[in-house]
Image 1 (cartoon, one colour):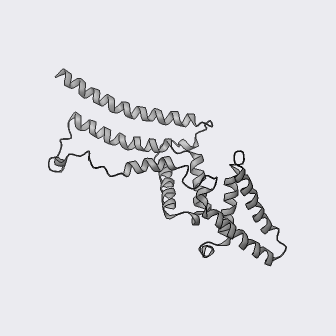
Image 2 (cartoon, rainbow, N blue to C red):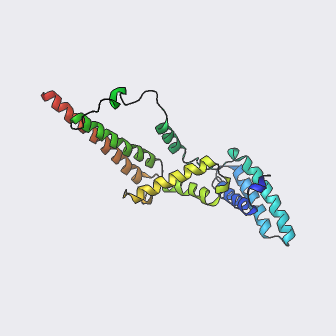
Image 3 (spheres, rainbow, N blue to C red):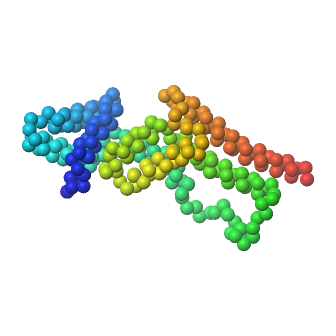
Length: 228
């Protein structure tokens, strides 16, 4: 029944993707090395088949094996879809959590707070900066290697992803493209070292500036109160 859902071409493409991912584990994982060789040999046999009949038989056998391996994907020694994005998922889950305690006073909808005062200015600043801070925190957990790896799953092997995985990868794609379109510096195109230091330093400086801006506004209010 599984093969009715996917074409043989899609399944073979998944097998090639698994070989590529398993190759990344060569230096530390004997199982990955064996599985990579095994799958690569099965796929190579299809290309070397002597007749159309032989090729069809080999394709069916290869597809069955690939699907059996994929059914155990949670145990495979590879980086699976969304694995690299797990920190971003956790951050977004925190942001969408429903808290019992609201930051808005219950009476606020009945009594409008005057906007022309220093406390309102502070709240306005914190509110606006908070969104920027959340975006920076997400950015610090994203970089071009992670994005390209997961976009590859979305582009080449989309039919094997769950609906939730597809939705999340598409959301991340929109977020990263939106940053470019709004004139934000493209952090993913930075020339950077393996430890990502230039990009990380830039984002942390941005975060510190946003937090300092809020602190300075609070200190101005404190100074005014002391004078009074």
